[in-house]
Image (cartoon, rainbow, N blue to C red):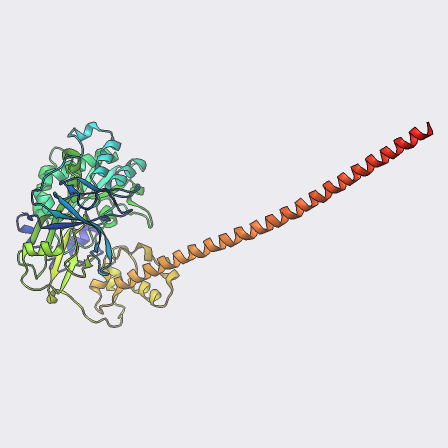
Amino acid sequence: MGLRELLNGVRWGVHPHDDHKRPAADVPLRVMPLPARLCVPLLQHVGAPALPVVAVGERVLRGQLIAAAQGNVSAPVHAPSSGVISAIGEVTAPHPSGLPFSAITIELDGKDEAGEPLTPQVDPFSLAPAEVSQRIADAGIVGLGGATFPSAPKAQLGLKLSVHTLIINGGECEPYLSSDDSVMRVRADEVIDGVRILMHATGATKALVGIEDNKPEATAAMRKAAEGFASIEIRPVPARYPMGSDRQLVQVLTGKEVPSGARTASIGVLVNNVSTCAAIHRAVRVGEPLYRRIVTVNGGAVAQPGNVLAPIGVLIEDLLRFVGLKETPARLVMGGPMMGVALPHAQVPTVKGCGGILALTAGEITDTAPSACIRCGSCVKACPMGLLPLELSAHIHAGEYDKAEAKGLDDCLACGCCAYVCPSHVPLVQTFYHAKGEVWKRAQQKKRTEFTKSLAQARKERLEREARERVEAAARRKAERAAQQAAAQQAATSASANTAGGASA
């Protein structure tokens, strides 16, 4: 542990010797020319997928709504450029499985004609917080740091839970990636304005912007943009992975720890990404929906690595064609090398949460065979959540999922720090992924079993009630018949007595 980390109290995580961010981070931002077509996915966020509102053959304009949000946790999708809808169907998802997911394919006409802005331009601070949130929702803004939670319900959560502080994530701790760095360098004014709008929408009274100290240019640009706004503070934080995780950033900037199983809002804090803030600025001030973003294209196989402003839904093969390749990549990754996902091939589209595409060479991939754990404890020191990865792994391999849960399996971020530092190359994070899936399946099976039991119990109670009701009904009928017979007999007796009395008279 270095002196700087000791002074800052950061003793978790890892710090790769070479973060591979440069020279891509220092190359001026480039704008990608429009490709021939775009495949815009319907599910680019946490929650329900958007519902198409266009038909095949219909011409659309840039910024036009093409799929509407469904439910409270959802986000609409807009056309990134003008063209004709050629298909609404399945394309390959940006996931190692290569499974299909739904998307709207647009054959671009090259004119890039824009539609009407979403809303008229007004002073956002004259709007009620609910109106600001509605504009954010209409623009389809989601968390651009990778979480992709829709931003509007998150802002509304701030008012419900009395959030007092915004934490703005400018950490970007993943190696290779520098898209947030680029946003802060070239769009610092937009980021700060987005922060102010978000403070108005959530009711927060101050904002802390955490930027890793390996981004001095971004820090300087953000400090200049924040001049005159005393409620916004720019704070360098140690460059250490996973500093970009919300819980770690909150702890470093505020000294507060988010309880296990709770959200940051429970302690009065909301976390948003710098790119999300810039998108909120454009949505509220300009009426521009989220249809493009800055993407880092990096890796040893890339001829001209750097940051590219690209439309959402562009195919990876078109993006790589723009930056050029020196050799055939040994692996394609969407996101960073620590938490990103390997892509099955290059015919998959980008999504709103895609901050980077990596084209890695064989030399950049470590596929060392694992050996037995030597119990060195390196994984324990690296875990940012204070867990015991080696014990978790032992319980999981023994099938003791309950004990793994008791040891904090649910708190695992799946950041990969434990696997990164393991000298035996034990696939710890993959083991935890498997265990979380197994725990989820068992929980679902338990729910189904309990539901079946409740149905059987309800049937038993219904049959018992029906039998009881039949017995009671039979008893009532018997009593009624007896009463009727008694009444008839009484009537007959009375009639006989009357007849006898008349005869004697």
